[in-house]
Image (tube, rainbow, N blue to C red; front, side):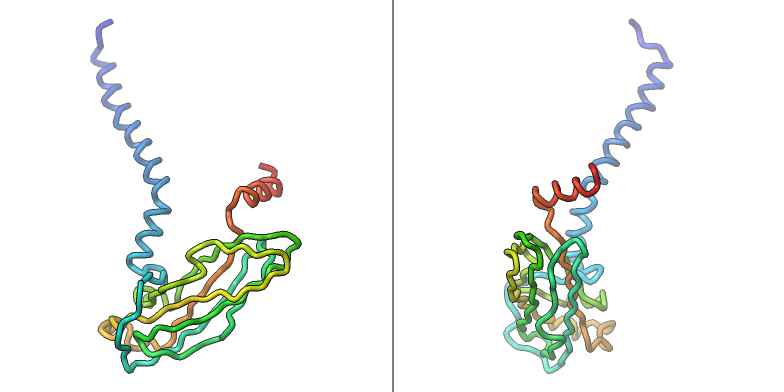
Length: 192
């Protein structure tokens, strides 16, 4: 069967539309990981950076670091900072603790999301080690102290937009982890 001019026109319209739909789907699928990577690299939205070590020599500038903790209502934990705030020199390695207690009658796995405020300080807040890098499993009634090791990057002193910043708040929110069991429990609650 010979192709008519109309079928060629239709093909020229349909193929780009199919490519647009496939491309949009791929972009939507990749948008969350790409956004997360963008935030981690740039500190956008108060996302702290990850480092392997603090600088050798801290600066004279002293900053106050405040600690905040929140827990999603679906996670039966009590979660709070062990200290409300500390004062550190810029570039000095610091260690702080958060405490979590599982109030459920069964083991529960949680994961923490984090940010700093003001958001523009995220590019200078560097974590060396953190409980938030992996999921945390607590047995029934178990309490644990969870450490976070961090420093404020001395590059903050070169950024004129950061001159007035004397206090940074490190904030965590714990959620129930998306494990097989928790996905099944959630689907039972929602009926899906």
